[in-house]
Image (cartoon, rainbow, N blue to C red; front, side, top):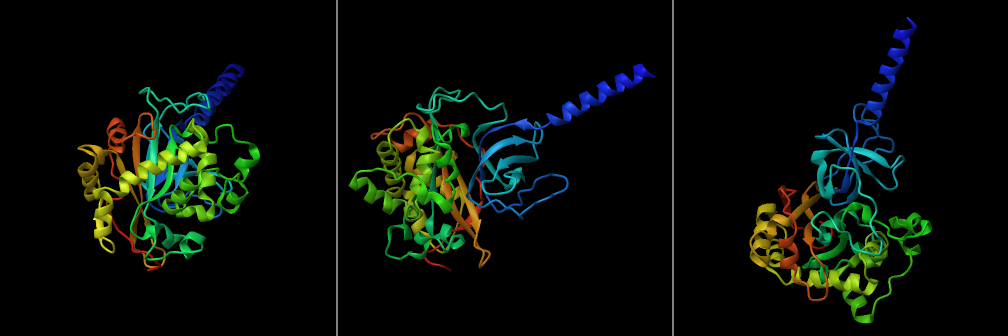
Length: 336
């Protein structure tokens, strides 16, 4: 009986160990395509705080529930607890893989994935849609039909990959202040006068100190100065806003566009295959229920500098199999 008891204990220990290690570690960034419950447990659906993802918002990807996951474990800043499960069809993963998180790279150098080239996600916002869900933000209260953001893409961020490149050599105090309520407590971003003026135009969120957040979380891992980081991002923004992609959106304000139309416009603007590197994120207007195109995320690969061409950076990156949100409305400036 003692032998069976000991063997039974061993079996239970092995089963318990297997259960504890069932989750598959994953690296990368989860981009929510819609608002979905973010639960503490998959089976019970327990959801303290009634937490949901926000369409177009990015989250750190931690794990999948199995090798071919039905759910992702993500980190939701401000939730209690922050580690939450979401269904995989709630969004898409960029810049990651279902493998153990790699050892941290030199935090002063751009990430070097398996391709040997630095990789990035370039996120563009359609500000009128964003503001439908963030009406109290100062940049949204100041919306004006004659302003830049009424008819141009605006800058959300340029994010070095993989996901583990967050907060390179950032103090614990600055990490703690990296939430929208405390972005004003983050260190100021030092730019020359011309770059600052252009950034304030192309990134309306500077009214909420978005640039401080983007630098602390992503720019510190870019391997260059604040001036170079934002200058490079603005250079890429100019290319998008001078292209048929922007023309497509302006001509269809108040109308719907499909992800296929958007991807085709990227092919027209930046060469065949460029559209395969583009994902579309939509959000839902809480007042009307309209599905709005809120953000485009572009995969880029290769060193980025003052003379870099967006077309080359797009084509050099790996294509994404899914286009994201299949269809949404191009929102007009102002609250609809």
